[in-house]
Image (cartoon, rainbow, N blue to C red; front, side, top):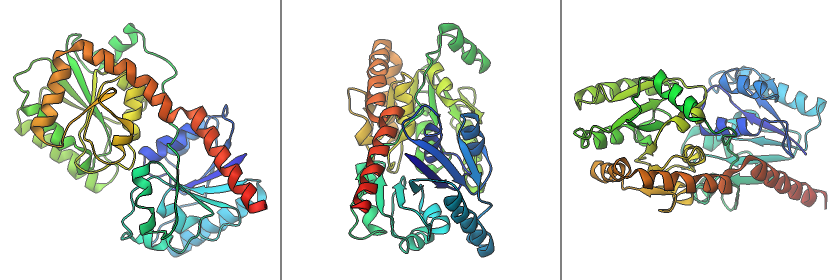
Length: 367
């Protein structure tokens, strides 16, 4: 089974993490990747031994660039054998995959409202199969594809294959000047307001007198609005008197390693996640998780695997404080979370399931 994945490639987030997990050579499905832009994703796929084809920059404001990218994609599908083409965003579906000469699958990773220009253009495309990364995401599909019922398939995740030794954990924490006794809280999410960075700072301000904790904020802004929000967070942290307790780490090339060196993952979203791959990655790294019970997160977390807090400063602070004061609870939740992550998003299992789903589609089309 050979699948050509179609995506932009100029940013990095949950979708890109999923594609990176599909790039290994030791899976039952062979994947190749047609990207519009060079960037971190194309590099990581190549480093993993995956095939990458660059179609050229496609922007809606430059129609000739879009036509050129579509032409290169059509030529690629003629010259190489792929069983299906699979688009991973409304942008890729509408700008690149329109009119592809191959069975077309759309994997929906984001929530639809039917209002964005990419969603309006995507209505003109008629995928042979629609997948959704969660049941919550699937509830929004009809706003773009009326009458279509997507199949829910949790995405594969690049789960840790190596557990850090105590010495390796010490090295990571020392690199960021964290004392051995300090409890490290981590958030690793795009710099978008609804991801909950600001709410987390407000919650930690309520725990200012507790000397146990420090906060790592991982990641770097990827556009102007994210840069503005990132800068506002720094001002907020200083204004709340948390300057010495909060570290903005910038770009981290290996987030799973960082997760294994932390003690708590807290991402108190103020808006719903389509799925929430970062929570799965945190569970796989043995971290107890504090999250808001919104969107796809409810399909990942129950009290046995993590702590759910309403997106309010006092509620989030109360859950964090429970974990700060109870090391055994942190350890118990962390141990249970590893099995939960594998159950949901083990890459070999989920990629094999993807292959079976595509094979069923092809059998139906051949009948």
